[in-house]
Length: 86
Image (cartoon, rainbow, N blue to C red; front, side, top):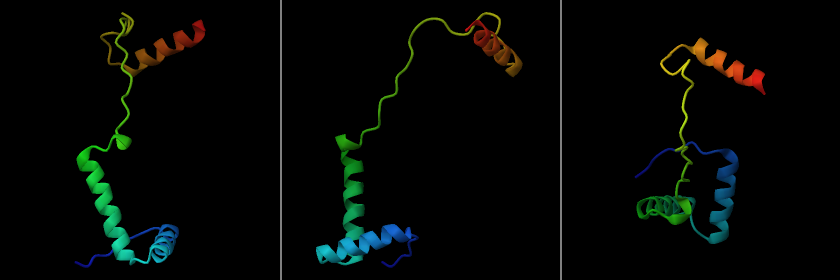
């Protein structure tokens, strides 16, 4: 199947050079690269796992003066109070 790709010029130069060194066509290099990437995604390659983000499970939360407020002004005022306290 034929298709058109927009590839960064520098990356394309590197790919052509690498393909020539390996004595394969650019098409074959692209096919192998896609195959490797897709296989890694399907098998859950441990080297490509997404990082686990930390979650704060402590107590506390919003101060009573802004707990029920959806006002951006209340949040900004509370932040200013914290800045002044430091």
